[in-house]
Image: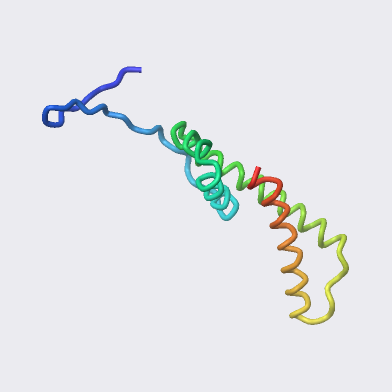
Length: 112
C-alpha cells in the first residue's frame, strides 16, 4: 500500500480515506445495536468503523432481528389466548405480544 502526501505549510499530511461503506439499510434494530456497541463495547465499535464494516454489520443484525421478531410474533399469536372482544383489549394484547418479542430479540441478538 502506497501512501501519498500533500503539503500543508511546512508539513506533509498523509492522504488517508476510509473505504466506502455499503448503503445503510438498517432500521430500528440496527440503530439499537449501533448505540449498544458505541456505549458498551467501544473497542468492537471502533474496530468495525476502522475496518469499514460497521454498516454491513448493522444491516445484517437488523435483518436477523426482524426475521426473529416476526417468527416470535407468529408463534405468540398462535399459542396465546385469543384477545377479548373490543378494540382496546385487542390493542393491549398486541402490545403485550410485541413487548415479549422485543425483549427476546434484544436479549438474543442485539446485546450479544
